Each structure stands twice: as C-alpha cells, then as structure tokens.
Amino acid sequence: MEMQSGFHVGEQQYCERAVKGRPTNSQYFVLAIAMMITLVGVYLTLFLYPLLFPIVIAGGVVIFYLAKRLKVEFEYIYISGDIEVAKIFAKEKRKVLSTIKAEEIQSIRKANDPVVANDLKIKADLNKVDCTEGDPEVEYYAVYADHGKKKCVYILDLDEKFLSFLKSRFKNKMSI
Image 1 (spheres, rainbow, N blue to C red):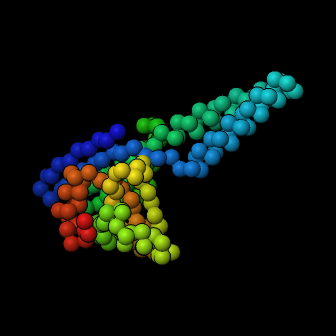
Image 2 (image 1 turned 120 degrees about the horizontal axis):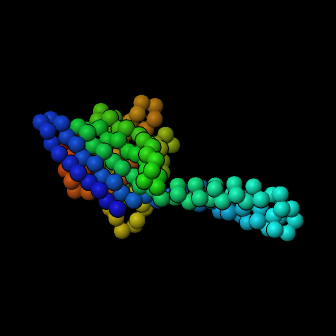
Image 3 (image 1 turned 90 degrees about the vertical axis):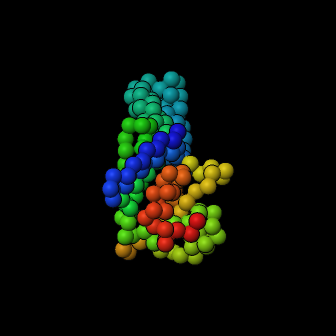
C-alpha cells in the first residue's frame, strides 16, 4: 500500500508517504514461541490437567495480539526539511521512530551505493534503521543523519514526489 500527498505553501513544504513494512525476525520468533507454549498448554489441558485451561486462553490472546503486530507499515512525513519516520502496526498504533531535523541530515544516497555498504560495514558508531519492506526489486535511499552522539543511516522507500521535496532542500547533500 502506498499513500502520498504533498503541497507547497510559501516556504512551507509538506509531503507524506506510507509504505508496506516488514516484521522483524524477532517478532516471528516470539510468535512461534507463543504458539508452541499454547500448543503444549492445549495438550496438557486435554490429557493431563484441565485446570490449565486459562493458560490456553492467555496463549490465544497473546498469539492474536502478536499476529496483528506483524502487519507493519512505515510512514514518512516531510515538513520543511524535517523528516518524521513512524511505524504503524495493524493500522491501529502509530509509533514515531525518529524525527530527522534538516540540520542533522548529512547526505542522501541510493541505498545500493557501494559507499553506503562500506559505511555500514566499517563505521561502528553508525546505526542502520531500515524502514522498508526489503524488496530487492525496489530502489531504496539512505539518509545519513547526525543526532549528536548518535549517527544513523535511515533506509527509506522514497518516490519521485518525496525525492523532489528533498532535492529542493538538500540539493548539495544528495548523491543520486
């Protein structure tokens, strides 16, 4: 699912984009553990000790909750040079991952650029924040940001409209 909108009002610029995300491996792992515990609870309830039934019910609730959390989207909002990156779970809960201020943006490159791969490999203080679906067919972009002591590279799925807003503000910082 992709959603986008954008407008210019004087110096104020606004653009937003929503893209499908990918759950982390740890989320799948926790779901698998919850399912195994629930299955063991069902077995124990049916064959050994029926009073364990509340554990089965609790396991079902946990599985339902975790399965909903696997439906992930990312939302990028550009407002006059600042980029807010948020994660949306099951179209119900929105969590802001980061707000990248315009003055914190160091450079913007294509994510498949060898420079990006090299930076992620050799720079121990550089945190990678992947906010994409991870589709190898899609071209992603790396936004380098310096948040003081914390240096990050955000991997984003940007379309032409969003890129045009970035180019209008960060032309000298873009290597695209």
